[in-house]
Amino acid sequence: MEDVEKEVRRVIQTAGPGGGLLMAGAHNFQPDVSVEKLLRVYEIVKTEGRYPLYQPSLSGKSSKSG
Image 1 (spheres, one colour):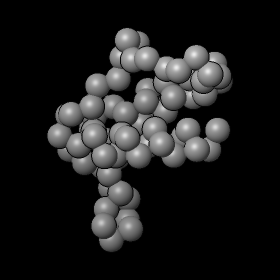
Image 2: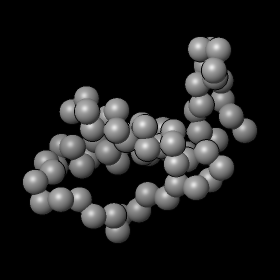
Image 3: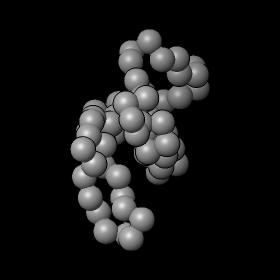
Image 4: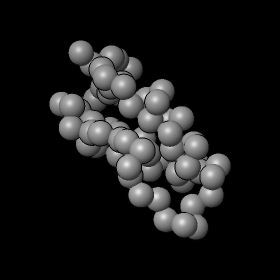
């Protein structure tokens, strides 16, 4: 499950800044993806994929963008 969490966070941090990321129920998941992984994707997007996005600063200190 950790690999799924890391990938979802990577996509949010890469595609999300500037308002460029949309995640909707129409996205397709492969048939071999477990329900648990699918639900975890949606949990992370719901909690971490809302704007303003959390963006770790380059200095290592956390900050909120916006």
